[in-house]
Amino acid sequence: MNLENSQNYYGKVLANSSDLKTDACCTTEPPPPAVLGALANVHPDVKARYYGCGLVAPAAIEGAHILDLGSGSGQDAYLLAQMVGEHGSVTGVDATAEQLAVANEHLEWHRDRFGYAKSNVRFVEGDIEKLDVLELPAASFDVIVSNCVINLVADKQAVFAAALKLLKPGGELYFSDVYSDRRVPEALQSDPVLHGECLGGALYWGDFLDQAKQAGFSDPRLVTSRPLAIGDKAVGAKLDGIGFHSATWRLFRIDGLEPQCEDYGQAVVYKGGVAGQERIFELDSHHQIERGRVFSVCGNSWKMLADSRFTQHFDFIGDFSNHYGVFAGCGTEMPFAGPASPADEGAACC
Image (cartoon, rainbow, N blue to C red; front, top):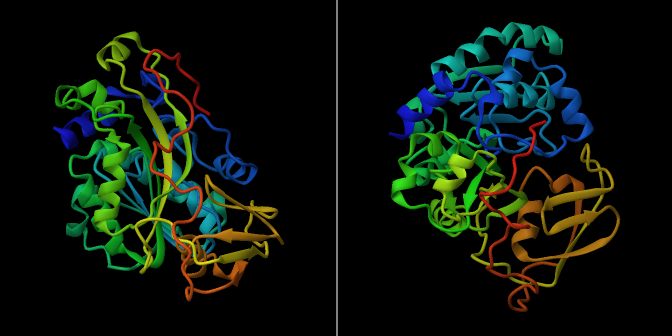
């Protein structure tokens, strides 16, 4: 049901983003200036069929090769194409013919708009649940993004496992999706409207953490989150008190990450140089690292900075020779901020 319903909902039921019944598949946070400027260079027809729930524009990706899972009409792909530059590339994968048609129709328009000699974007038709059949080269992508799509597939574990194989060492899966505060009952999972609105297939956050770790992403990091509003009364009535959040996570493919944050007495100093984060580098929702100040980190955070594309922007203090137990402040409670209620009023997309 999942793939067929997704193709029908996003290809035929929805004509544009204004047809959504909830704010689950829409982005409400204001984009930073650089992203806002890049969005101005995206064709209006592409933006009209955008159904993302977050900003999947990670920092320091100039020259990177990016895979966009569930690329839809191409808004994120064309946004990222500007951020990676002419020497980087973006490959979008989507299974909905109508969405792919819009994305492909405007390839040359965007190439000309960006001033590139040739397009650095391509779109591939395929099911992200079966990435292994698309013959994408293993360990060939610096970053994999996805925007409110993984919830739509049945076998989410398969997506996470395939993403790990496709990432280069030190690469990351940086994605936004919808999560529930408890497991969604099976009867609601099969509801075509709830599934299409990114609610029926939402993962319970605890199950997501388990699945990500089983796939090989040992320490998922929450970047941002917000409670979702269900403006449609009929949809809200079906949900029976389940709360939903939109959240952006980053999952690094880095060897040696531990199941929890361990303290080795280490610290880092941010030297600056990351565009858009010149004064404060944001690793995740708990790590805002001010330039020039010594910042204590756990062993996992150390590795995420030292063994990734961010290493050139940091000085590193200490090593792994002494262990001092679990890093202070780490816990296992629900990570999202703010209440979520299906009765909340809707919010506008940007």
